[in-house]
Image 1 (cartoon, rainbow, N blue to C red):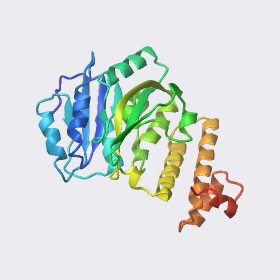
Image 2 (image 1 turned 45 degrees about the horizontal axis):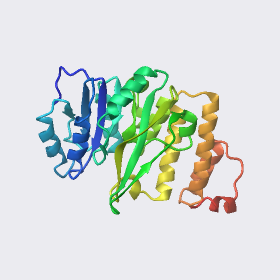
Image 3 (image 1 turned 180 degrees about the horizontal axis):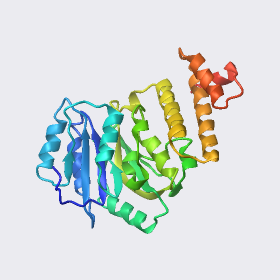
Image 4 (image 1 turned 90 degrees about the horizontal axis):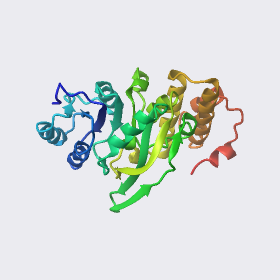
Length: 292
């Protein structure tokens, strides 16, 4: 268990389930961070059926930074994610899922230094290295350094979640996210609705791409449904300007067009939603062209 006297500036939120092959490397990459401040590691271990929890407990026994939340009941991805966020005590929060890891031992220090020096930003991300497990290959995602606005994120989530660090004060009641299937994107939209992110050029993390990943198992139609639900939830629950509301509605309409093109069983319901959010033209031939 974490030291009660620890006064963390950063809380690292770790979400894990059945990741016994990866969790030790993931946690050691966090523990090994070089910082001039205290940080804690808050772990939402969601009742794994393998030895993930045992590995975490063994590491926690020798490191007072680690807090393992109660894992006696399986909560599901988003409820586990949200309760872990709520347990974080730091001024800033960072993410690392249990099958990913960090490769820059100065990641947290660089990000905290940036936000302390640039208080107009709500968070800071970095570049990322993809590890394609089946092919045993790596590929760096070299995205442009600079500001990441709400407007750019309204189109798609352009931030690798394991690279970010953001101000805890910018997130409050997150209960509206409980039934969503995606957690990081609506959170990023909430934060950037108040202050933008900034992306540093450094490559600081490894994101593991494998068949067992939640999103890799989803079919295109299911992914589109999840996107629609995220955008609608943000539109309903986040305080936005009229212009930003209009931007989200356009994204909802465009996603619904793609989703309707798959002709799911509830096409009538989706078509009604399409018109409710401002869609005005409906042509089946055009819709089919959206199928990739």
